[in-house]
Amino acid sequence: MSGLGGLNKSPNGVVLGMVQLQLPVIETKADVTAQADRICAMVAKARNSMPGMDLVVFPEYSLHGLSMDTDPAILCSVDGPEVGKFHAACRDNAIWGCFSIMELNEGGNPYNSGLIIDDTGEIRLYYRKLHPWVPVEPWEPGDIGIPVCDGPNGSKLALIICHDGMFPEMARECAYKGAEIMIRTAGYTAPIRESWRVTNQSNAFCNLMATASVCMCGTDGTFNSMGEGMICNFDGTVMVEGGSIPDEIITAEIRPDLIREARLHWSVENNVYQFGHRGYVAVNGGAQDCPYTYMQDLVAGEYRLPWEDEVIHTDGTSCGFPVPNRRYREPATEDGA
Image (tube, rainbow, N blue to C red):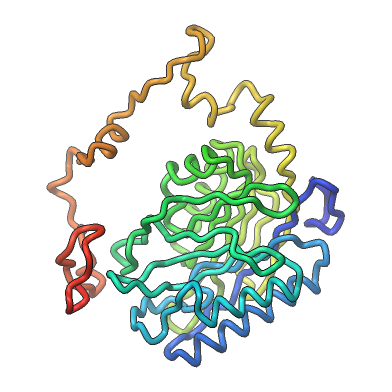
C-alpha cells in the first residue's frame, strides 16, 4: 500500500473515497432532485480533491434520507432522472461512483438498491439489498443475488448494503465469486458502532478481501448517523477510519494484486479456500462435503431454529408497519400489502 491515503498512488493501486454524507431531510420529489444534485457536486469535489481517486462511494440513504418513506412519489427507478444525473457526474468527472436509491417496485414494497457506475457513465453493477434491517426497514428483500463486477485498474468489486454485512455468508459469497474489494454502504446510527467495526474487519480477514464501508453522517433532526467510514486491508487491519464529520471523504489505496497474491500463496488462515477443503493435510484435496445443518436446511426451505416458536419480533408491527399478507415473490394485492 502506498502512503498518505492514496496521494502517492502505485501503478497497481485502486484509490477509494468514502463520503460520510450529511444526512438529508427528504419529503418531496423536489427534495430528491436537489439531493441528487448535491451528490453530483460531491462527485466533482471528490475528483478535484484527489485527482488519483478511482472510485467514490456514497452511503445507503444518501438520496432519500432515513425517513423510511415508501411514497411512490419520491421513489426512483434505475432508468430515472436521478440515476441519469449520476451517470453524467461519473462521465463528466472521469471517476467511478457507487450510489444508493430506494427503488420503486410495482410488485411489492420498494427495493433498497445500489449501483456502481464506471468512469464512462455506464452501470457496471446493480444490487438489491438482501437483508433489510428488520423490523425497522420496510424494504422488499432483494431477489437478484450478489453480483460481482470488473472495477477500476483490474479490480473485482462487490457491493452489499448495511445490515447485509452482519451476515458472514454475504462477505463469503462476494469473495467466492471473485470480489477483491467489498463495498458496504450504510445509514447506521451510533448504537451499532462496535458491531460495525468488528464485522468490517472480520469480513475482510475471513475472506482475504478488502472491505470499504461508510455510513451517512450527522443529524436530520430526528436520527443521528455515525459516519465512521472504514477501509480494511485483506488481513483485517484497519487502513483508515473516519470520525463523525459530515461530508468528510476518507481515502485509501487498495492493492488488488496483493490480494490475489495472498489468495494463492497464504497457507495458514487462507480461510476462503480451506472452507471447502477441510483437513487437506490428512486427506487428498480435503473434505469437500457440507457438514453445516443450517446450510442444508436453508437450501431445502426448512431453516428453523430450536427456539423458532418463541421469537417475539417476526414482523414490522413494533415499528408501525402492518402485518404483510403475502409470501416472498408473491405479488402485492390492490391495497399494497
